[in-house]
Amino acid sequence: MNKEFFKNEMNSLSDEELITILKNRQNYQEGAIDAVMDVSESRGLQFLKLKNEIKQERLQEEINQNNLIKEKEQSILKFVPKIVGVYQIAGGLFLFLTSMFLSDFRIDAWAQIFLVILTFLSIIGGYLFLTEKKNGALLCLINQVLQIIRFQFFGFTLKYCAGLSVGLIIESSLANGLNFGLDIQPGGSFVLGQVYAMNEFFGFNIIPIIIIYYIYQYKEISTNK
Image (cartoon, rainbow, N blue to C red):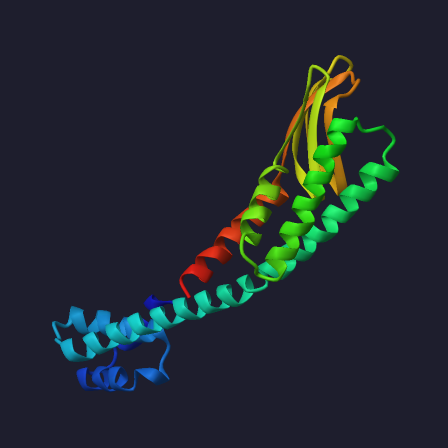
């Protein structure tokens, strides 16, 4: 029922009945109370004390509701180190196994060094964050930032993912021209250096962006404790 419906009902009541409703407002819907206040104003009635009490009650109710939402958000954010930590450890291990043993191409020696560094960054950062040790969040942030952008131009490729990749990609090839698409790749992948290919692409991974957001949210509530 909307306020207009209640106003039609309240217009038929006496001033004393309107006051009684305001005094027993906990038994009525909010729309009914708003209708009583509108009708009382149209009659030139001044229920200042009651109206101020209602405003204070609603303000306090809004504050309590906001605090409840904030507490729920903080209770969820407490799980961020566990989720991100496990994700990074699993992603780092899968990345190493995939790149070293399951990949169809050979990785250059210098690229292997970067692969080992990124693997340790993912695993160690994940472990430190999981156990809420110093610099854990920082290492996770660095690791996730490196996974946002991937590209291939003039035969040079940079692609790093330790976990799940979900994002947009712009691909250009002589055969198909310019294409836009959704890029979804579970697992881990690492490509750095010259790769023979007939196409070029630029894309980004949205998963690291989401993880970075929640890490910052977690750091904020941790700082405000």
